Image 1 (cartoon, helix red, strand yellow):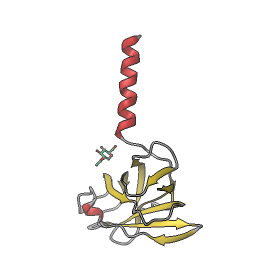
Image 2 (spheres, protein in one colour; image 1 turned 30 degrees about the vertical axis):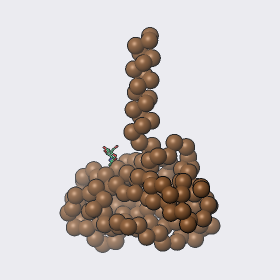
Image 3 (cartoon, rainbow, N blue to C red; image 1 turned 90 degrees about the horizontal axis):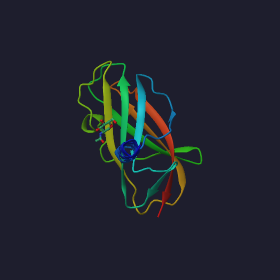
Image 4 (cartoon, rainbow, N blue to C red; image 1 turned 180 degrees about the vertical axis):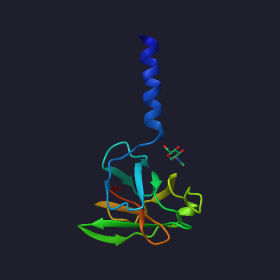
Length: 149
Ligand SMILES: *[C@@H]1O[C@H](CO)[C@@H](O)[C@H](O)[C@H]1NC(C)=O
């Protein structure tokens, strides 16, 4: 019993420490399929993003098409209005993906989201897309966040 309890305890620790798969809304993944989205750290949902901190985003997805390139496009949706959110590295091929991308492959897109101190303390929805060479979405997902000081 104690042995099993300990094993369960350590297993739980591994699951908790490794990654935080979040609930998301798919907003039109056309040439890919999202397996899961991890935001770390995000122990509670919606994710609370502290100013001055960096958060890692790890998207596991399947590709349905070949593409030489891929490009990430991020928007912050505030009161229903999507506002472009430029990220320092928008090249998917420099975000954990080996290019050219091929069909029927599982990829991990890994990037960081840095919350600058000048951002307002608001709740918003983050929309993250990864586009192929024809600007069609490998994935598009939305998740709510709260920016906090
Ligand atoms: C991203 O997630 C995958 C699947 O859980 C994992 O194998 C990989 O190590 C993660 N990558 C990073 C940089 O965290």
